[in-house]
Image 1 (spheres, rainbow, N blue to C red):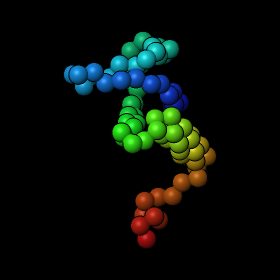
Image 2 (image 1 turned 30 degrees about the horizontal axis):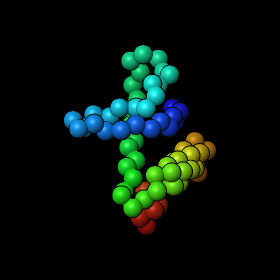
Image 3 (image 1 turned 180 degrees about the vertical axis):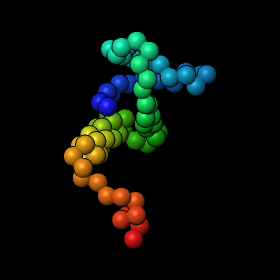
Image 4 (image 1 turned 60 degrees about the vertical axis):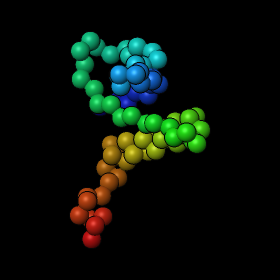
Length: 74
């Protein structure tokens, strides 16, 4: 699985519209993670920190640098 970051907006019906079309095979199944900026947050700062956090988490998951939930709760 790979990650692609794109921007978009939500219309008055709650439908997501991307600013640019995805360059994926037609009818591909995808997972969507929505990051919404708060009124007092800088959108660029949120995108940068969330993007970096996601990259680090993805790297950790792919390299096996993880802990089980039971280890975290003990």
